[in-house]
Image (cartoon, rainbow, N blue to C red):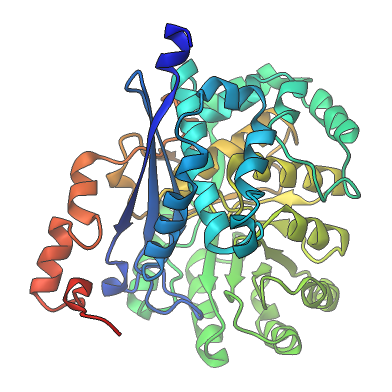
Length: 454
């Protein structure tokens, strides 16, 4: 092994359970997730040279320890590799994680093991960006189309899009790319806010936050629904009274309804002119979503889903069944950047807009890169597209996302914006962080270290 290869050898993969007590203020609350503590399994991959890449996958508190253990179980597949060899044939490496002959059984390509895969893959992309001193969106945009395709595992989706079709789309995306990069650097990419719409917020808080974000230049708002119809009507009335009808409103049920219930409920909310209903039923119910989409089309309401689609195969089926109008990829739900790229390509071919989910720990930081790459090198437009923004936990990152005039500004720091501040890790690592020690002492949360067994 040469000295250069030795420096590029992966010598460790560390995983931490990082949690924030967002349930105390009802931040992030919706009809399904009533008391989330925004959290993440946080992976750090270290090279022999000392350079580190950081990646994460978002969780809601309890259960993060399971994802952490899954990532630790995959570490032997990563440690000892020469990182540049991974990048030369990234699709093959990705498949080695998702198709490990025994671990695959507890997925396959879904659940905790796939969330762990996302954290590891995201860390490798952060490391790649740092190695070549580029933000990930620019790394992706600068890759030759053939090289970009080499990071994607097309298994199971070739009946929707072939490599040849994907290559043609990427070649078309090269036209006008430099002009779009210039535009992106100047104005950024449009976003919407969910911050004023959490289900656990009082009317007073919703009113205050809606006005705050309206004054900040936001024109697109999302509100949580699904627990009580009359409350939803009042909440939509409240939002419309503040933002008016010349701005955009979306609603999000977070999977709580039956199919017919979703149709009936949304007919009652139709007077408020929502652009979309998000996750109206089970995230795995392709045909249910298709039925809802068909029933609501005459009302001008689209269906949006994807934040809990477990892999590219499920996205393929949603797209083929015309079960969604807005494709909501999540940067940490499926297997990291590599798999997400295949979803963007399928959506492009099928003519479906991608409007990514974000908001949880680090999701805004990551997803901005994906959508900016799409704008620059694939779709070539931001028309009809918008990225979610939730103003939480950004202060814990070394290079947090930057919002100006309701636009994500293009990141310039190398990597994937996923490196957390050491002091934040020390404070919120679970259960031994200083902030958790304090909350346990105050009786705000149960201390799991006192459990003696089942």
